[in-house]
Image 1 (cartoon, one colour):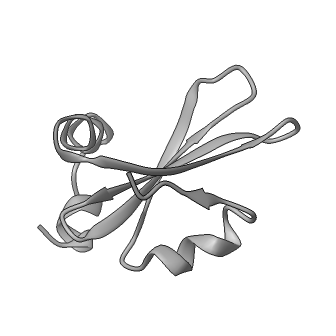
Image 2: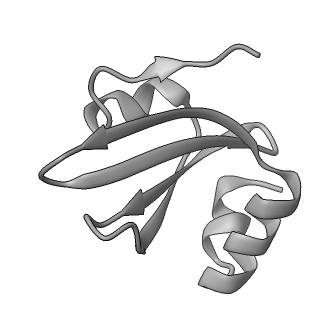
Length: 80
């Protein structure tokens, strides 16, 4: 699956594929903006963005992890 194909799915379909096949990579929490989590999925990366009350706001797709750096500064990568 490509980033284009994934992006064309409904929010629910994206979320389900991420739940079933995604691998957690990193998380960044900001007390004023909320939380962002990054997952690896099918060779690309998916960012889940949460508001301050921990409700999902949106999903972003990146073909390269380092493109997420502008979105999640200071992120720590878990290699486990």
